[in-house]
Every structure is written in C-alpha cells, then in structure tokens.
Amino acid sequence: MTRFGHAVEKVDERIPGIDLPLMSVSQTRGVIRRSELTNAPQRAESLDAYKVCRRNDIVFNKMSIRAGAMGVAAEDGLVTYHYEVMRPREGADPNFIAYLMKSSWFTEELIKRERGIGAGDQANVRTTEVPFSVLKTIDAYFPEYAEQCAIADYLDRETARINTLIEEQQRLIEMLRERRRAAVEGAVSAVATSGARLKHIIRSVRQGWSPQCYGWPADGVETWAVLKAGAANGGRFRPMENKELPEEEIPRPDIVVTRGDLIVSRANTRELVGSAAVVEGDFPRLMLCDKLYAFSLDESRAESRFVAAVLGSRRWRDLIELEATGASYSMLNISQSDIVNLPMPLPPVDEQRCIVAHLDSETAKIDRLIEETERFIELARERRAALITAAVTGQIDVREMA
Image (cartoon, rainbow, N blue to C red; front, top):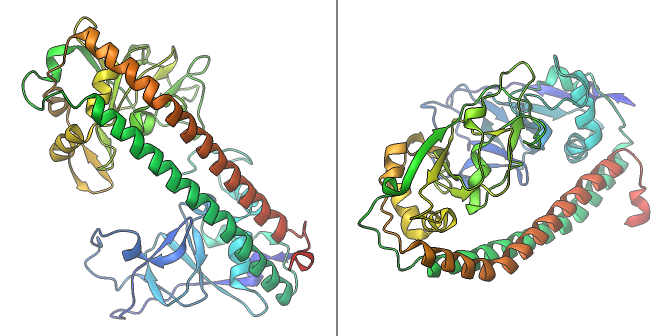
C-alpha cells in the first residue's frame, strides 16, 4: 500500500495570457474541450486566473468526484478553480490512477475522510468539496508500473465494450421515446393553440418549499420527503425523485401531493421546464418543492392525464419555451401566470378519457420496453463499476485476460 500523495502531486500552474483551450471534465468522457460539451459562452471575461493542465495530468471536479467526474488530459488546456490538477510522480501511470479514483473502494475511502460526514452518509453529496488534501491521505494499492499500465489497458478495452453497449441501448431508448412522442402528438392533434385558457379549468394551485434535505430518497408514505424538480420529467410522475426531510424540519401537510394532481415544473433546463405529469397513487408524506406547481383541475371539464399529454406535445412545448426566462441556459423559469394562461380549448371530458385510454394502449408496450432498457443500462453500469474496482484492487489478474 502506498500513500496516494506519494503517487501524485498537486499542480496549480497559472500563466496569464497563455493561449490554450478551455477544458471540462465529463463523467463519461473524461477531460475534453468545453466546446465539445456546450455551445454556451464562457462566463469569465478573462482566463488569466484559470489553472493550466498538461497532457497526462489527472483532473477532477472537487464537487463531483464521487460521481466520477475525473479523467486524464489528452492535451494541454485550462480549467476553472472548481477543478484540481494532479501530476503523476515517477512510477505512477495516470490512466491507472484515474481508474483507481473511479472505483467504489476509493469512493468509500473518501467518505470516511470528509469532514462532518460519516462513512456511508450521503448528505450534501452535491455540495461537499473534496480537495487534494483529502485524497493524499488515502493508502492505496499501487502495483509495479508495468502492471498499472496492463490494468489500465485492460480496463480501457473492457469499459469501451460496455460503454458501446450502453450507447446502443440509449439510442434505442431515444427511438422508443420518439415513437411515444409521435403517439402523443397524434392523440392531441385536434386541440387548438388558441381559445380557452388553462386557468379556466383550474380549481386551485399549490407550490412547495425547498428546505435543506438529506441526499437520499424516502418512500413519501411512512417517511416525509420533498420532491425534486425532475419529478415530472418526461411526462411521467416519478415519486422517488425526492429527498428525505430531516427530523428537525417541521413537515407541511398542506403541500402534500394528492392523487390526480397535475404537477408542472416551473424551473428546469430549456427542454424540461414546464414538464407536466399526473400524480398516480397516494403519498401522504410526499411534499412539493418550490420548483413544482400542483394544479387541481375541474374534473367535470378536464381529464388531468389528457392535459398533461397536451402540455407535453411539441406545439405546447414551443409555447412554454418561448415564455421561459432565465440568465442561465441550464436553468430557466416559467411563471405561474404564464402557465395558467396557456391555451387549453379541450374537447368534452368523455372524449378526453377515450383518447387517454387509447393512448394508454398505444404507449404501454413502449413504456415497458423503455423501463427494461433503462434497467439493462443500470446493470451494465454496475458491471462496469464492479470491474473497475476489482481490477484496481487486485481482485482479478488481468494477465490471464490479455
């Protein structure tokens, strides 16, 4: 076992005026040019304060290291203060170190060392910075340099196969979702984008709150929890998209979701802001967050699931995105006033219910296939994580698999 700080050194090189590309760290693609991830302009007017990373340096995001946001730089570049840059010392292979840092064993070691957070505790996982001073104290298994390279090469090959399989399944999911969208578009094609407004069929509106919660979900039945903004993503209500409410916080029963509520996201990305879904089931301890609205509709005039389908169709998505505002592309907002004033000239409620029943029969098989494919992807990711951990901790001999 070798102290991690003996295998790598922290580098904090800053060269004002240097002409290098701005880099980012992706969980799946490692260290790549920022331009490959986004077209959004850089926020800083000057890059003089940015850190320099050199080819074969290891870069990780201090805020997202647990999620695997790290990699080896393939070229020289610049990174923001959110990143730490490390350079392998003699006898240490950067690719092996990157895989070591992605292992579940390494993550467990990090958790043990994080100040104020006990082992296994996931609270504030998104806001806890993990600097180099924490990493360098970890005692890790570093085999001879040649074996490090062999392990890294083996993992390059095996994870590439798994990644290709995952990408194929993700493309399949997108095709299935496109088929589902086409079915929804056809079902609501007769609804006009003018006339009566959504507010004419709304009985009441509620909005939630966002206290400081734990990082893990709760059932919302026996344990109090607060929904996250993504609970309505994709037109499907996702009750497990929540965070458990700490015991010291007083619950608010008045903002608990109820069966049949039309949930609409008021703050999200451009593609997801205004996402709508209907609460299916009873969750007596599941509360709205402040990024979600819950609309109770007049059942004599509107079928909630039909309205959700309309709001998810392309014509209404265009209207929603047109009204959404915000300084950041990654987080836009739509006001309650803009939502309730969206056009909603509905057919008779009996006709709406017939359309929903037909839509159910059209989409049920698609939804099952999507769920099965998502589960397959999750198993593949678990397999990849287990393989990385086994290889870097010496549980498998890669020489036998060459």
